[in-house]
Image 1 (cartoon, rainbow, N blue to C red):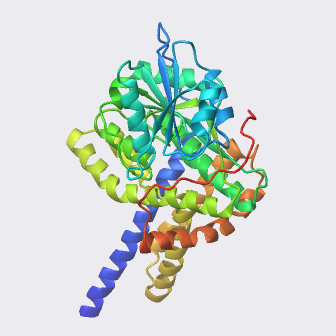
Image 2 (image 1 turned 120 degrees about the vertical axis):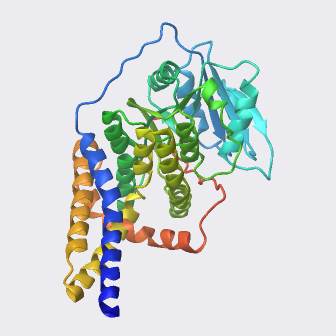
Image 3 (image 1 turned 90 degrees about the vertical axis):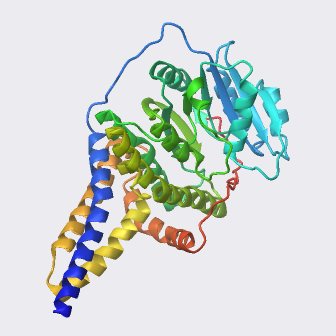
Amino acid sequence: MVVTGLGVVMKFGLLVIALLLLIPSAVLWVECFAALLPNRRVEQRSKARPTIAVLVPAHNEALGIAPVLKQLLAQLTPTDRLIVIADNCSDDTATIARSVGATVIERQDSERRGKGYALDYGLQFLAAAPPDVVIVVDADCLVQTGTLDRIAEAAFMSGRPTQAVYLMEQPAQPRPKDAVSALAFLVKNWVRPQGFHTFGFPGILTGTGMAFPWSVIRSVSLASGNIVEDMQLSMDLAIAGYPTLFCPETKVIGLLPQQEQAAKSQRTRWEHGHLQTIRSQVPTLLKAAIQQRRLDLLAIALDLSIPPLSLLVMLWVAFTALIGLAGLLTGFWLPTGILLLAGLMIFTAVLAAWLKFGRTNLPASTLLAAPFYILWKIPLYFAYLIKPQTRWVRTSRDPADLSKP
């Protein structure tokens, strides 16, 4: 009787594991295939252009900030402002920014470091004469012409934070894993939000190319050293009634690091922060969705529950092998069947995303290099289990020419 009871418990446990992996796989599949549908356009035009203030937090960005600022200034009107927050800088960032034509405010605080603190400092500076819309752009990102106007107007008309499409380009001398990283970024920041946008669901802020109505951005506190402050801000604003609006007809481009150590540092910060946010915010969102009876919060929780793509594949491979072995021993094949379905969903979702959005710039060999990219990231996830990164660390920049369109 005891043996039989243990067998039932084990089968139930295997089934639960399989279903837990099926949920994010299914959400990923729905998002990617919904992105293939015709774009959901909601045209809202304001009678007068909102006033804009662009905040550019910058920590030792002398290497490449000039072309970024020039491209931003070309999209602004005389009533707009471009504010560079030279945060704990020890180089010529402030001097270069002023020479280009930006307003520069300097901040020195060795204890409170990070993008959140820098942005809070910028907002305090703007408070004396606030704009209609605040836009946040990272100091290493190029903003496509027309993007500032689009996201500013969308934020102004909707009264909600608005996110532009944020993608990564490969470095000057790309390695196979750089192409896979660019594809993973494309799936996360363009394809999946596009799919949710098709259903009318909100998106998630991704750190740059973000527009906020002044009243909304001042309703929350940004002063923190959170390593993924954008994701946390998304959750806080969504629960407060300001879910993020995704604006697909836009583009902001960053550059993947050329240096191996810089790439590792960047991915560690992003993905450790992502996993910490999943652990802390998914339960919070689910609770708020029930209390407020809001379907959009449930949708955000489901979207957020998808781990980084390489980790999702890694977990699927490991558990499919283990549960398949258990199936051989017990003859209970339902969990294995569920996991095979989950694997098919992951593969077809990524393939569909690449065919529709990525094959112009990313060759088919990108998909073949995916296993090596996943192997490269295994130590990163083990590090999360042992000692997750919790402090903000700036990614080293490459001496790259960011002036290309």
